[in-house]
Each structure stands twice: as structure tokens, then as C-alpha cells.
Length: 415
Ligand code: RNT
Ligand code: ZN
Image 1 (tube, rainbow, N blue to C red):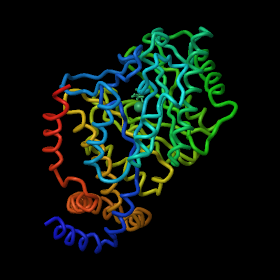
Image 2 (cartoon, rainbow, N blue to C red):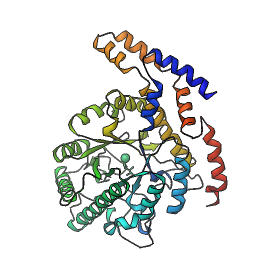
Image 3 (cartoon, protein in one colour):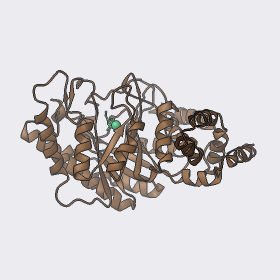
Image 4 (cartoon, rainbow, N blue to C red):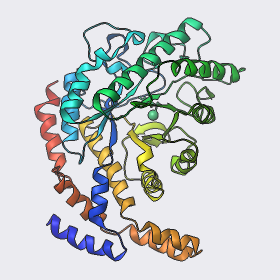
């Protein structure tokens, strides 16, 4: 049945000049960077840092969160088995898998060897993030921009350690790692000095990216934020700050869907940012009224992000990462729903007759543009998606749900 439906869909798209077979080959090559922190509510494994801070909030009490690295890897394997294609895992520093009681500034590649061998064995890539929160030295709310030189230096050391771990991942796995730097630094209330912390942040970043730095195996990205819980009035690492820093210092920008004004969209920023930097990192998320990090659904913004990447041929220069955490539903299901939605949105975009639409636009035929964009919404992309899942050997349509329920019963509920 799936094949039959695919055949008729293929004919319909062919009439628009879209070759669905080619589209599926293209889609199979797009790697999504799935974030580890959905699996355990952003707790991590380092002993001193198993609570979240920095304004990040995970709500819900669905049973079965992973409590060890082995459990997390089992959950990830389960999720990846229901997602078509080979992807990447985005790790945070506090997910070090080690018996040592190591502090953040002492982390080394050896503390992540279990992750590397697991990734190698399964053909996954790895991305990385320093954890500039969940630590007593972030209690003041300031890390890389802290006015206390000892604390600032501690976080610089942690970020250098993280960069080296990212470089190690890239080298070991033969695919470039993206190390993404996000810090929570900011003020709840209106500050007197907005400039000082930004000058200290710049100094810290310069120190992190100095010296022996391997940019072949590791891309460094910086993630901005407009405001957070506890930093409502002022965030040091704003969009303008990191745009400027990245342009000047040849780094990548990371755009998180939830880090801007509620009516501002990152889909409208992608084409601008990529005019002036080589590569881009995305944190695809879903803010509901605030940066709430709900599971990614097929909403207008997701579709628009995918269209921007596909229409402008920007996929190869963009690292698509996910960033959400919901503890009110099964955590493996959350990964599967969010990641498959990202892929489905890309598929919808790839099935669009871009040249025809661009021509209508240039001809000022906005009637055709609107009419076609609307008609395309009910074209049978679902049949193409189902066939893709079947071909890639993963559950078709909602069949994965029964597998998750079984896994919850057999594995997660026993934790
Ligand atoms: C926080 C940022 C950041 C984190 C992760 C855990 O607002 O989005 O990317 O969510 O690093
Ligand atoms: Zn993010």
C-alpha cells in the first residue's frame, strides 16, 4: 500500500517538475543533531551538577527518565531506531561518563570515551556544549562575563576543555563536531553597566579561541538569547553581541527558535546570517509564550525554517540541532516526534517546485505565488514520507508509538 500511494504521489509531483526519488536521496543525507538532554530532563551525570539552573526549566513527571549514561544510550538507540537516517548526538559537558569526581574545568576527552565508542559503533556523529550552568560557580548568574577574575577564569578553562573535547570528537569520528557556547549571564533587573559584562565576555571568548585551535574537526558556534527566567532585563550574550563577535572572529552563530521576541522568527534571519558567515547552527525548538522548549511540532515556523534552508540551498552550511525538553510525556517519544517533524518539514520543502515559484515572484505574479503555495499544502507529501520510512527500515506512520509503549513497559518503567 505504501508503495502504491508513493507511486501516485510521485506522478503528481512529477507534473510540477519535482523528482521525488531524488528528493528522498537528498533527505537521507541530512543529519539532525539530536540533543541528549531530552532524555533525563537536563540533569547530566557529573555528581556536583545534577540540577538545572540558568533559567532552564523542565516540567513534568512522566516516569522513566534515564539515570545513567548506559540508560541514556539505550533510550537514544531506541529513538534513533525509529528515525530514518544516520544522525548526530548533541552532548553537554555535564554528561561526562566517568567514575571520577571531576570538576568542569578538569574535563578531558577521556571522560567521554564511552560516548565516542558508542558513536563509532553505531555510525553517529557527535556535537558538544560546555555546561555554563548547574554548578556552584554559576550561582551568581555570571560565568564568562563574571567580574570576579577567578570565576571568569574557571569558566574560560571549562570552555577550553570543552573545545578540546569537541575537537577530539570530530577527529575520532571523521565528521566535524559543532561545539556550541551558551551562557546564562544576565540581570533580572535593569543594570547600570551593560557594556562591562560584554567586554568581559569578549575577552573570555578570545581566550577560549586562542592558541592551538583545530577548526577542521570542530566548528565553534555562539548562541544568543534575548531574555531568560532570572535575566529578564538584560542578557550579556545578546544577538547583536554574538553576530558581531562571530563576523569579526570567523565563528558560527547559533540561532535558537525560542531566543527572540515572541513575534520575531529565526526563519527570517537565516538568509541574512549566512550571507556573512560560512556556517550556521540552529536550535530548533518551540517556545510557547516564552522560551519554554516544547517538543517541536509541524507548525508554521518549522515549515518556514525548512523552506528557507531548502529554497536557498543552505542545508550544507547549516547544522540542524534540536533543543527541547518535555518531562510530561515519554522522553523517547519526544525525540521521535521532534526529530521526525524536522525531517518531515525538510521533505515538504524539498518537494516544492522552487524554480517555478521564484519565477512567479520575479514576474510579480503574486496570484500564482499565493495560489501555488496554498495548493501545495495539501499535496500528498505524507505518502512520500511513509515510503521513505519504509525504505529506510523504520516504523511507518504511527507504528513507532506501539514500540515506545512497549519500551516504556519493559524498560523505562522499571527504573
Ligand atoms: C538555553 C539554551 C541552551 C540550552 C542547552 C541545554 O536557553 O537554549 O541551548 O537549552 O544548552
Ligand atoms: Zn538553545
